[in-house]
Image (cartoon, rainbow, N blue to C red; front, side):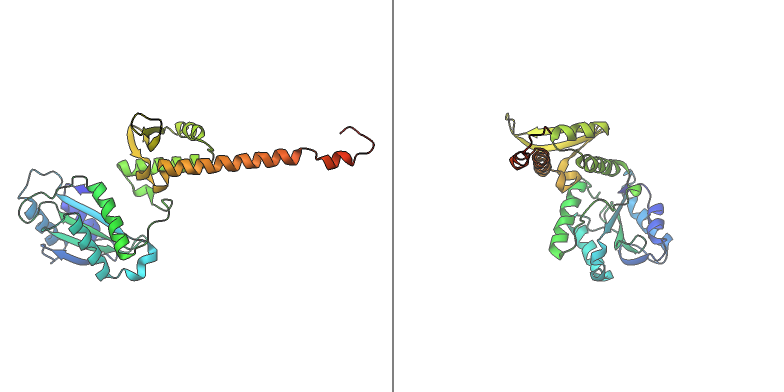
Length: 267
């Protein structure tokens, strides 16, 4: 997140119950006001930048809590910053204990120590790639589902993405083919678009749109890529056909039943 003022952001992360400042650089640590003033002074090197505040929450699975000492949290946060090119600037790293997930808040100055602006170009995509890289490097737990995300805290595009996620998940409970899925999602105001390979009819990608905001299927959830959705729908259709065949077989009279009707009574 990018913000306009350091005061509200620093007060939020520092004044939470049990908040613990575990690392900092380039700021005076006498009190909260001195931290804020340190950030403010440096941002004056680029006063026209509207959003000089960088605020990132690095949150982990409760399964990894025993491993996530303060030292481990600092190592991960600093490596994350290095990978995101958040370097040579002021920052504080504050640990919170309020939501059941081990997490820290990183507040940094987007105006670096030389008065240059730290770029936020493609930061959402870089963030995703770097988080995966660090989880793989340190063997951290991947989230198994989006069901436990506290959606009431989400805003903007992130909130919309989870709205689409829940819509697709609900529709998949009833859909047995692509036509079903399209109709069920249409009822929820969600449209589907397919990406084709060249000038062929071969589908190689899918996207979902709601309120003029579009997401690639795999960006919503790894299980919502075209290939994985197609496989799921084919399996459901096959299961439905088998159930119908079994039902028809059960309802048809067998030859044995006919032969055991010596009186020729009509059934």
